[in-house]
Image 1 (spheres, rainbow, N blue to C red):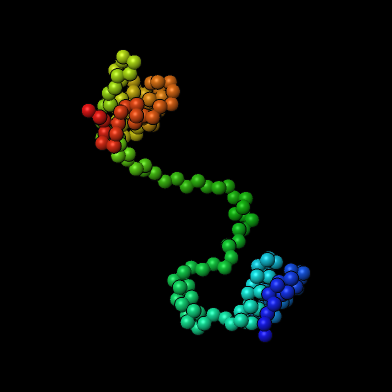
Image 2 (tube, rainbow, N blue to C red):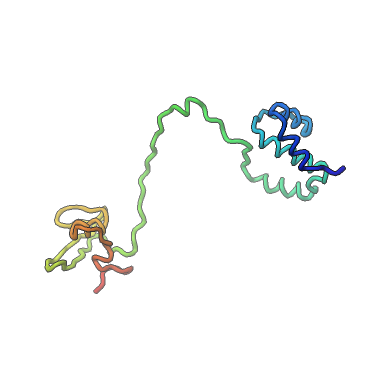
Length: 166
């Protein structure tokens, strides 16, 4: 028997969700609780086409079972309880260690530079940088404090990938 997919799809599109559930139960031999009309239509069409044109081979079924054996499969998303929706979100914090930038010299190094005729000395600290007794989170923040405009700190202090230039 040849299945006319377009005709079946048109007929399913005209059905209500209740009628689709009844058709699903008839085609699959099992009831469903879903009310998703698109999903029901697709599943019914798939089963009708598989019945009419042939289903997966036994070898394909075995391979699919092998692949699915180790996977944690979920057919639907977990339901959210109403108590979970109204609960205040809790922030979980953990210490984050930023990767050390390979362009920076070792902690304790003093970066020196002359800017507009005055010498600058910036100490590299474990938690940032220190200039004139104040701490800054980045070299760019130090450069901005010195120049008054946003400046790339690595370029301002003439640092390349190996540390300060001679």
